[in-house]
Length: 362
Image (cartoon, rainbow, N blue to C red):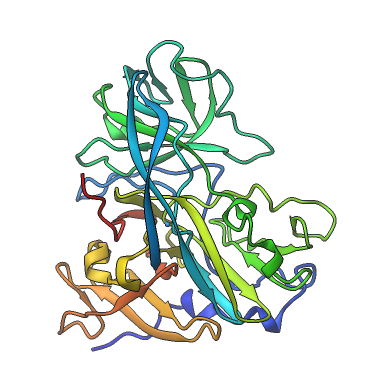
């Protein structure tokens, strides 16, 4: 018994067929990244629902950012080459931005996290222009490790969150990291000369069914060729977008390595989510099994992989409760290629903890 690709996934098609965002609002009908109002839900495996994704040359760089207030640490940074094919590409940024704060919280409420007095700069993490600019990621080992929560605002000791986290049942002493969101403009910083103006585009898929497409105009990312409304579009960890280009282009992506898993929110009801590991993968790929996709809802939720450029499905995979499988009989060894994502379709709102695909030795 083998199921055909999910109906949502089949809606993916090449952007070459619809280059005008003003005339076709259904470009690549699929991903669900709701940066405004992340939702939380405990699964039976206790992983929290949340939003939220290579050829790596890695360098160890001493980072002066304080851990709490006093302890400095070394963080690995580097770059990788992304081979973008002409046509549509499921692109998941392979790095995160450098941390603005890392340390222990001293308390929590339904919508706030407290840290040591004067350990952060007031208003530094405030949302702007309708978008979250920063997020908190829980790094404490345990059920909540990897949960990502958008920040609404902050004082010098209290972080106000964009959503209610009561269901997390935090102890109030967890370790966290605060990072600026990777943005559409930021992810391609330094590589814009390779991107074709008024042709190449990025399409996102929201939980409400909308599919905003932003074109590069030579300087900014815009949906209407007037306003730079796509520049600050967040790309939550573990998620991505359809990057459509008119010709093959090699891009060099730089950033900081995050070796921790990331909990990615999956929107249900046929909405397709672009999901992938948040780190470059050593050797160029890793198996769906190793990345954690066996945790999908058994025999129902699925991940579909696509060929870069043509956006033709190459396989749809399910979980049988233990293993990733394509035919519900044999475990699959299918891999997810570097810097790419798969299209995950879930029957109901849920989450999945995606492994980073990369381990940093202590």
